[in-house]
Length: 341
Ligand SMILES: NC(=O)c1ccc[n+]([C@@H]2O[C@H](COP(=O)([O-])OP(=O)(O)OC[C@H]3O[C@@H](n4cnc5c(N)ncnc54)[C@H](O)[C@@H]3O)[C@@H](O)[C@H]2O)c1
Image (cartoon, rainbow, N blue to C red; front, side, top):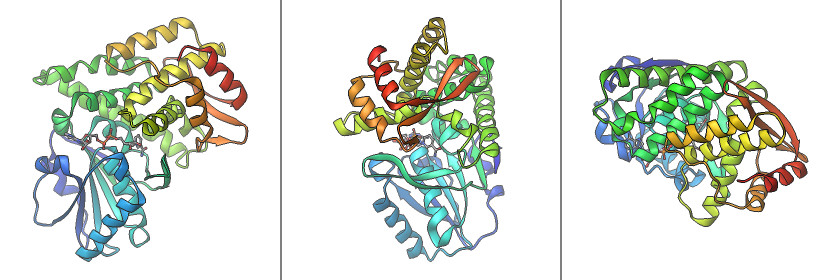
């Protein structure tokens, strides 16, 4: 898998391999920013969590069949994480798998969702239940798409960046927190855009280091799940109530809960928890969970990373150091009731 990093989308054509046809599965909200090339067959999609489903995938298979796409075709997924998850799943299963690449257009997709080969759909109310692990041939990164994003959507990407840097490196972590303010100034000075590009690529490379070591997510790749057990549980609770939570916002609160659990288990200091809270607030990200410990715990019990009566949590010790910790479900239930969610 290769990253191509450019100022704008104009260099895409040079990375499209020889194929029997190029099919662009594209989020309808970004079609106006994407080049119209005669060789592209467009399959526009409505990118929302409801459509991240097997039923919606059937429609995309039908569109591909309607175009006569064969096994030598090339698929490009263009959009945020919903689109890259769907396009990657379609490309991995259509005709038993065809070649594909991604042009992620949200910050969250550029630093996380499009990277690592995990793709798939939600099922029966649970996130990402059905899917494959299969790497795209390349990921084309450009900040050019980011300026049309809704500010909340930009910030959820910052949350995933903060998460990755929290695993690896304090200096980049601080830069990512500071980066959240860049979006407010759309006429960001050239150095800010340069810094944004640098951090996007660095974040992707750091994630790929863990993916290359542990593609199937049985070992150290799990460190990337920092905050995610709680985030997925909150997203499940929110979906049940019809509440509007973005994935990165849930990750922000999930990191806070992970830090509080770690503090309760004497793995990190209160000072660290307070610093993390201040940093996330500075990045205008949410830090409190609106659900009760009971609601959160019952969603956690359904987590696919759970095995038997315990669950593997990723907990922070400090910035740049996180650990895997198996915890009995009963103990987690007790801790969730003791901390201030
Ligand atoms: N596969 C993985 O490893 C992985 C990792 C993290 C998240 N995810 C998944 O990613 C999804 C969230 O991704 P997301 O936050 O990118 O969401 P998204 O794809 O829903 O995009 C968010 C919104 O922004 C719009 N949009 C996209 N690009 C735009 C642009 N350039 N300008 C204006 N609007 C634009 C979309 O239409 C959508 O309304 C979730 O489904 C999550 O499960 C997957």
